[in-house]
Image (cartoon, rainbow over all chains, first blue to last red; front, side, top):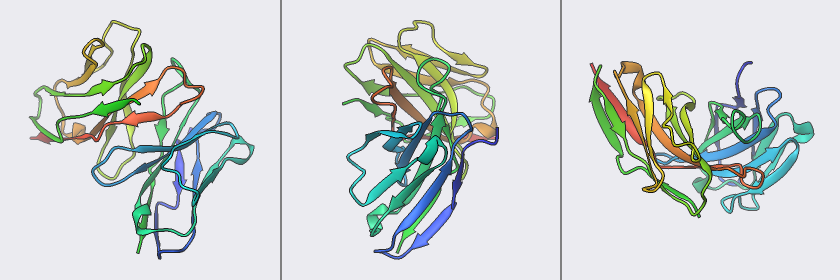
Amino acid sequence: DTGVSQNPRHKITKRGQNVTFRCDPISEHNRLYWYRQTLGQGPEFLTYFQNEAQLEKSRLLSDRFSAERPKGSFSTLEIQRTEQGDSAMYLCASSLGWGPDTDTQYFGPGTRLTVL
Amino acid sequence: AQTVTQSQPEMSVQEAETVTLSCTYDTSESDYYLFWYKQPPSRQMILVIRQEAYKQQNATENRFSVNFQKAAKSFSLKISDSQLGDAAMYFCAYGRSDGGSQGNLIFGKGTKLSVKP
């Protein structure tokens, strides 16, 4: 068990460019979550997957954001036409499922996005 | 909608002493989960302790314990025998029990804990 990994760890881009982040969850974890964390704030939910199905999307997830989890393994989060307001830490987490003993979310180290 | 409030932006404790971090939440649900997560500087978030709302007994994990007051919607974290490694941001989080439709956690803004040697 190597934990949740995220790549890249840091991304600097110019406004208007597209960026893509990758998250590799703990193997056999069915659920995968994306959160966004800005300075001085707690993480805010963006979206989550149960296997390959995207079950919920936050209103924070504008149409410039898209997430996928093909084959229920790794997940990607793409931001199109980035804006300065997108600058944040993007966190990925995974859990075995939901309910006692299965719902603990294990977080990755995050991808810090800076939009210039 | 559920909300989580952490009213202490920063706290400080002397090494080996005890500190309590506050958390209140608002929900109309009767069954849910509550969590405390720790985020050390430049490191990933890890779970400290969790509590099921249907359990009256307060959860404990070694030096960490909670005071869960369901009627008051309060969920405080007590850290005993504080260690330098406890210095971190601490986040209180709420999770619905029917995670089938809403599996996300709702986090408070966090409390930054400093430990003085």
